[in-house]
Every structure is written in structure tokens, then in C-alpha cells.
Amino acid sequence: QVQLAESGGGLVQAGDSLRLSCASSKRTFSVGTMGWFRQAPGKEREFLGGMPMSGGRPAYADSVKGRFTISRDNAKNTMYLQMNSLKPEDTAVYYCAASRSIGLLASPAQYAYWGQGTQVTVSS
Image (tube, rainbow, N blue to C red; front, side, top):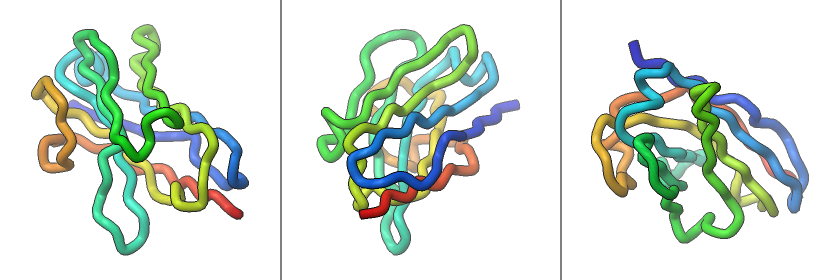
């Protein structure tokens, strides 16, 4: 069974940092691609970055490259999203997702499995 669970969201001030975690099963973590998305009120779900779980470097959306970093801990079957220099525009629900395909997958439709999301709120 594929299960994903995000954690680490909260309320921070502009300029602060947060690290989000996405815990998954061993099977989910070892096959395909995992990615991070966010969705703000009234907006479409936005791709932030993704990483092939067989190895390789993460890829990022231009909007967050340089501020956000994706990493993983294989022993814990966990993927992380480190967010620095947060802005009020970053306020959204953040989701992790998994796909059995491998590649640069930037569309939500390419991911079959999703966590429940974690709220990130950045105040001015």
C-alpha cells in the first residue's frame, strides 16, 4: 500500500526557514519519482521540484530554485524540502507525491499518490 505523510509546516515570518518532511513506505521510496507541490487558495497546484528515487539530482521549478532544496534520507524512507528566505507568497498547502514513472515530471496528473498536505503560512 502506498502511503505518504507530510509534516513540518507552521507559521513563520518572512525571511525565516522551514524544513518539511515526507515519510513514505520503502516500496514507494525506492521506485519511480517523488516530488513536492504546493497549492495556494484560488490557485492551481504548482510543481516545486522532484527527484528520481533510483538516484540522481533533484530538479526545481524556476520560481523556487536557489531558495528551496530537496534531499532524502534513505534509511528513514523520508524526503525533505528545505525552504529558506520564505516570502508571504510562499503561503500554501504543501504536498508530496509519488509516481511510478521516471523523469522530469512537473504535472500533478503524472503523480498517482499524494499525501494529505501540510500548511505553511508566512507572515509579513
